[in-house]
Structure formats: structure tokens, C-alpha cells
Length: 219
Ligand SMILES: [Fe+2]
Image (cartoon, rainbow, N blue to C red):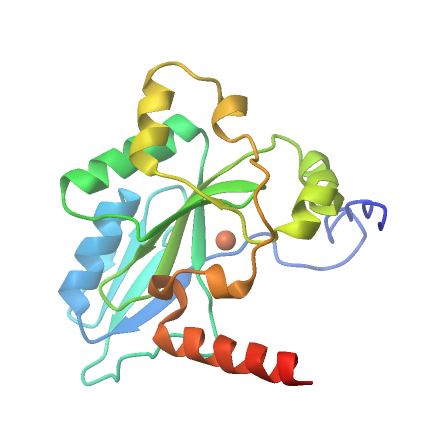
């Protein structure tokens, strides 16, 4: 098995002129108000500017982390198309992630997929247009420990992760189980892309995966 790569120093420390941050994500939509309200609710964001065409939202020191652009008559984006897979937001603690899960469930916003990816404990939500938003917490404190996990045997057999029940995780967290216990990787059978829920990749994905695997077995 390959040895873990040494983590690269940040580009600027390597003497390169590189961006200092990933600034923002802009969504275009024909469901303008619904999208603005959804991102405000999910991210506890506030508007820094809005007019009937564009809304800038932030939940931290950046002027806008998310912008929503109002464009009429856009076509819905089919699932399983090339492009952005999802946008992920990290919480500082599992407690914050689970509190957010409970808060959102209280207003009818439920994750469609909860999975421990090994490196992160993640909850996937779909915005009103079906764009996928991952709310997550890092399972490891240090990037070196994550890298070691990625090069270890567990990740070689299952690169997708282990699904979990968020209510159960929430109950265990409230009962006082530690972060380490709650995010512990559980060995399961090898997992392929066909086990990714239809809600994540769409029905077409399942069909294409079945066709591809039939071709492989015929060869
Ligand atoms: Fe992610």
C-alpha cells in the first residue's frame, strides 16, 4: 500500500502567488425567494445586500459566502450531470452539527443522506433547486491523521463511508458519548458507487451504473 503523501505546504508558503481563500458560491435560480430563505435558514445567514435580482448572504466575516441570482425561466438541472457535485460547510463540533440537524428538522428541512465518510461526519441536504449541500464536521483534528486514514486499509475497501441514523447519533451525543466514539469508523463490506442513494445522484445514475457493470461482467 502507498505511503501517506506528505501534506503540501500552503502555496503562499511555497512562494507562490495563490488565492487566500475560497470566497463564495453563486447560485442562479428561478425560485429566488425560496432559495434565499432556504440558505438563510440552513446556514443561519443574513443578507448583506439584496434587490430583486441578487442577494448576498453571509454567516461569518466574509461580505458574502453565498449569492443567489434571480433569473427567470431556467431549466431544472438533471441529476448526474458533470459539474459541481456539492458544496460543503464545516461546523466546529459534532454538537453544533447535530444542533443544526435538530433545528432544521424542526422547520421541515431534513437531510436526505447521512454518512460517515471516514474523514468527515456528513449530512446532505437538497436546496429548493436540488443542489446538494453537505453540512459536516471533521472526524480528525489534524490533516495528517486524515491523510493516514485515507492511505489505510479501511478506506481502500470502502471509499464512500458508513451511513448513520442522525436521530440515533443525536441521542447518543446527548447521552454524553465522546466525539471519538460517535465518529468511529465501522468496518463494513466494500461499497461501490451503486450504493450511493438515488436521492444523491438521481435515477439515471443507477441505470448507468447497472449498464456499466453488465458490460464489465460480459467482458
Ligand atoms: Fe464533501
